[in-house]
Length: 158
Image (cartoon, rainbow, N blue to C red; front, side):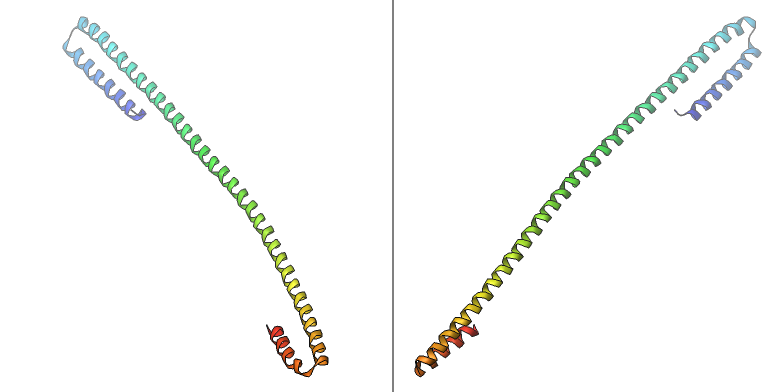
């Protein structure tokens, strides 16, 4: 019961007692009133005790509900904290992997540059060797000139 309901019940009970008392006063003599008043007091005290007990139970229930809500809020906060810690760790792991991939990428780029420079150097060396061979062939014989020229031009073009 909430407080308003208790107040309404108290008022109704007091009104009932007052009406009963007025009715008894008009119908009974003095001896009956005294015994009736003590009976009314007992009923009133019992009702008052039950109302007090209801208030106590209501307060206990309210405190219990508050404790349960506090525990639920704490548990939800803890769950969120655990998720946040998980995401932080996951983010750190991703950053670590990202840096590893960047270093691997730079290494691959460096290796490609080295390969390209080696290729260019080899091409230069082969061109110069074929040119030297070409000139030697020209000097040695005119018939080999045509064959050597074809070989050199074919290798240089590819």
